[in-house]
Length: 314
Length: 179
Image (tube, rainbow over all chains, first blue to last red; front, side, top):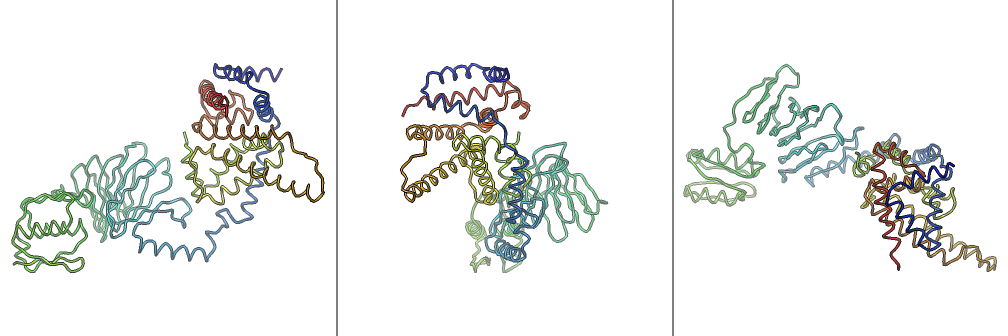
């Protein structure tokens, strides 16, 4: 009776009937094989609890579990730290799991030669790291909050989730958003945020200073004091876009932006050069090309020593 | 729905709970599957235990290209074949030592045929979409009813039926291909 019930249960569906029909037309071996499979599936089940205990004990015995595993072996820890330090210093970009933290934290570091390193967070949000910057984020965000840690500069494009705020821990300040895009720059006890879309809340770490920023605003926290201005710099995000726009700007500002975007050093021989006014748009051009264009425009000459450009009148 | 990729990533990161979930949800059907090949429960359990042991130990290195379920079944299959080959060698030695020429293995024609069938079944499980393979294995190797599968996966019986239909269609296609 029981078997019949089961058969009826499993016989449902056109495909199942077609299959049975097909099976009856097959040779003895296939039929037997299929029946064996059926019988085995129906026979007594194995003891999964017991099996798991057995495996778990074996893993524990062989020190393959985290509690007393290889991660806590002192020799391994020293070796790992050295590898970590060398990795950070020489390879520039280090992507991996921070093995010293209990919760699984991912760390991505952009080295001195790398800017615009794209990171996709567990919720699909995108982060673009400028050079010399580092972001830490959990393997999986908690239900209540999406929280990351930033050092340096990064552009955030955050997936909207009104039920789960996104918080950037930028050292001396926190940035809280629901879903928007913005740039965060940290350094010298100053945290600066530029909002490109949506709304952002910027608050000092102590929590007693807090401002709301909207599209186009630049907010800053310096020494626990919050300020807000409208952004007037078209090149604020040039480190990411590689587009530089100048409209009658002083050459001083032009050179300053070039330094920031391309990580080069530029020295001028006189203050007079810095005060020249320049108008142009550069889109993805190399620093060499840009410097050459500037020199041609103002009848200057330059020479290069290592990473430093020297500009002088002809 | 939690995808295979999520599970693999968590296990890679040392999530023992996720690993335990995977073990508990697939152990029975993998053991039964091994039993269709080896006809012996203890050895089948050993093989699956060993597979999970290695899976955890080498979790950082292992590359999984098919669905997780497909990967597990394929691994069990390979391990079973390996064991059978090993046994044959041992047996050959024993026969030589004892000077006996009795052949205790089953009909060799049947054996080759079965090997081919096992290979086909494994290939299909590997090729089926994640959920489809899971449902198929639950039905075939865990002996679960459609209603039980539906409950277990929080899906409708219709979905279970549809997926089983899909799986059986694949089997029909594959098994009717004559070599």
